[in-house]
Image 1 (tube, helix red, strand yellow):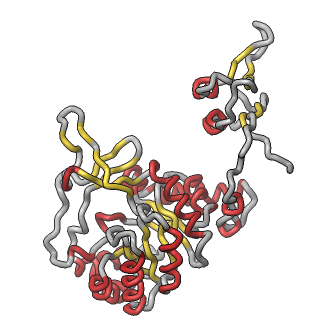
Image 2 (cartoon, one colour):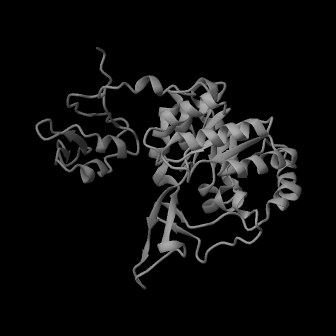
Image 3 (tube, one colour):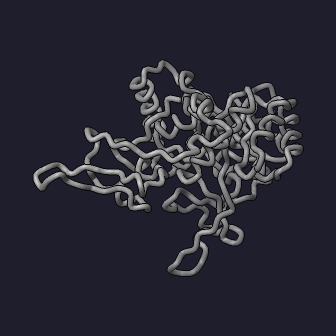
Length: 342
């Protein structure tokens, strides 16, 4: 199941209640590591969302989760209106509520009392104790946790003009896309180990493999926003197909088979307290030289037994630190660390 996060621009409606908010000039830019945005809330008044937009979205026949925020009085007013429009659930953002879980829990309780449909709390990556936040929200009655929101504020300078590339206050913006995925996956894992309610993984999902990573960390579903902006709506079908193909290729019937399977491999102590040398599978190795290029210790050598023989990769034990960089970049997975048997 892939849930579509329509993003700050379209889904967050609470602060547009006065019908006057518009976006800042230059509100979103592509950067090599993802997307930066300085967008405000929706230009559309909340009445239009309730009367029109949600109905259009529901015509797809897919589950629809609306996103609102932030303060108790805002969700108390918007929650029932959004529920009445026919959405299947409500996600409320906690992005600007600070590091103390108390105001977040207050919002959760108010929203829970205001609607009958499931509610999901979307957590900010800036929360230091994200697991404690999740546990407090679970106790408050939320039906699931969404992790994570964008990261920032960030600043990108146009080197041709010396001016900020975004038009928000101070030129600051918020980062999304592939660069935040490792943070998102870590948060998903921490939350999944701490609560029994479902977790929705968000952050940098551009492929089926990216979604599988979130799911293995404990996510029951995922959201995609930046990928859809950069690639278009076709990404949803592609990612869903790639997830299905992964399950078939690995002998699984459902994502339930792999949900959270990585958690057992995350012990509190370091996984590798001693140096291990990577092994080379010569049948898979194409001798492309990437491992040698990326080895900062000079431990990788490309050699030939003779001029007529095929070159091969050799790891010099006296130089290898066992960092794993060569293993991570090998395109054919010819380099790997052998599993310890004891």
